[in-house]
Amino acid sequence: MNLIYHPSFLEHQTGSHPENAERLRVFLPLNTFDFDSGETFLGLVHTSEYVREVQGIAENDPGWIDGDTFVSAGSYRAACMAAGAAIYAASTNGLALVRPPGHHAYPGRGTGFCIFNNVAIAVKHLLKSGHKRVLIFDFDGHYGDGTSDIFYDTPEVLFWSIHQYPAFPGKGYLDEIGAGRGTGYTLNVPVPPESGDDIYEHAINTFFPLAEQFNPDIVAYSAGFDAHHSDPLLNLRITNSLFYEIGRKFGQRFSSHFAVLEGGYNLQYLKGSVFSFIQGIIGEEPGYPEHSTTSHKPVWDEYLHRVQQLKPLIRDHWNFD
Image 1 (cartoon, rainbow, N blue to C red):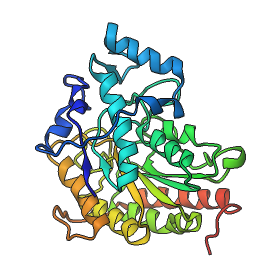
Image 2 (tube, helix red, strand yellow; image 1 turned 120 degrees about the horizontal axis):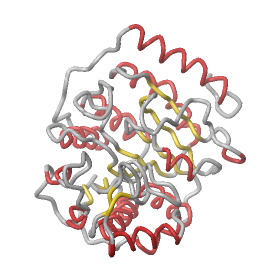
Image 3 (cartoon, rainbow, N blue to C red; image 1 turned 90 degrees about the horizontal axis):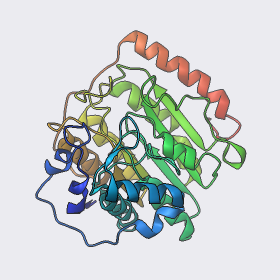
């Protein structure tokens, strides 16, 4: 699984913001891949008015488009190239090592550090190109509210997220299961703060049969690593060993997949977390193992209570037997 990288991603200048260029510099040196900008594909997800708005801000008046999300002079080009990298990754089984991230971006607005929704653009492109079923597994510690919104009524896409709740963006609770023809195709597993590897492993094993029943043509990972125990923006206790196990479990079951980088803000650990996931997918020995974490009983109790609430909500759509 190649790391799909382009120097333009560093042109998205955010200063001392947690989502800054140093997140990718820790991986350098990297090969630069030759792929097209995703600018012509933004309309698969985003409104033309919003695209023009971002372009205008970048060209004329760099600044904040919401309380968390900055557009600099180089951000429009970086964001277009990030979308292109996601499309390229989808055709090559790669991991798009991009910034800005994307899974909080809606069709008409950016939020949560995200400008354009990279994974959603790539998935829309796959569907337009003939794929019938795409699984998006979002294991970023924050809920991918933009991606969920984009595919909320779409039965061709199963959106599965495991994330901390409560936390930003305040969405992604278990009763959000999709709408219309897409009812049952949004699967939210909200875990409590202080959840460790044991809870994540239980959540994956419990709901993995649903992903198998969906039988996707390809799996798209919104690969965020801010659930790591070191991350400054969340209160989860996940280790590189768990990221490795995610890759291993999915890699053994599904042959066609790609990933797009989302969160992960501790520069000391991010590289090891990303490579742990990749090593799991491709079946290499883990290069950055950590001792697995266990969760305290009150955290387990709350998590299991949520799982018991979730199962009846989706039982009409999936077989748990």
